[in-house]
Image (cartoon, rainbow, N blue to C red; front, top):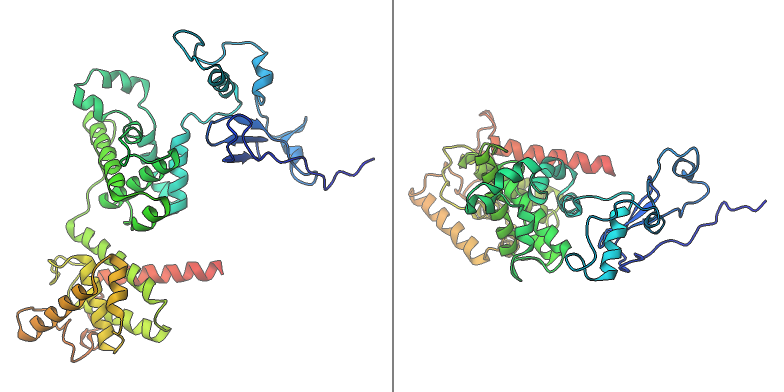
Length: 401
């Protein structure tokens, strides 16, 4: 008897129809899906020591139905829902491709929605996907049959807004839509995450990493975001969906400051030793507490969040003599200018000294804010939120290691 324990069959590396290498193996069904044309291939490239017995044969736990398009073509039946001829598909090759896809065993009726979900999970994490999966389906799947009949009876404006956002976004002119289906999926994924952050469904994410990685620009994300929000509001007006309660201005400011702190101290962790890092972190937290940030009584409510965080951190670095080159590093985090950070810092210090700016001593550089802050008072909510986030992050990283 021949021993085939280590023998493997030749692995499928490209689609038989379109020659694409974008393949996804579904081992539990014994299939390979082409991510470009949608063709499903039969795949039994399994080793003798794996769970092949659960996939194939009489004792299989899973059974692929109609797993070969060429065989099933000879079985008869209704065939694909199309016609070859004068009023149908004229390209014979395309007709047979669509016929194969129609008779494939497993077809995802909305592959683009699945692609958007995959991008959200890859770029922003699984938790983000769990929160926003319903928003992806609303943006990338058509209305139900009953809803579509109601839509057709609406005026032109409402009819347009109730149309599927994905179709509108992917059919824009060059420069607004992406250059490929994958880029369009990234644009819609980024727009959904950004919209969710603005509405308070989840924390805000910095779009710059996504744009750099995918080669997209802000106007593409903004166009998609506007279209999805219009569709959402149209559904709300029809009673098919509900808008989430909007966060207050104070809550949105608090979230922006916490996010700014995260970005800056992630950067500083690469430039400061642990002792200096902890000292600057605590000093900045104390400075924001003196400014009453995170409350409706914030003393610097008119200062933009990113600038406020940058100036506060710069002031803390100055307190410990660590300011050399710091303004340039801080400016790079948010795309600001080092001269702008330094000039705003100088102005706030002078206004504090002259009494024009009542800052509770936050910019009194003669002493540290940690010494001024009364530790017996109730801890500032914004500081508690930021510190809790860092503690949870450290626990997560330590458990993984």
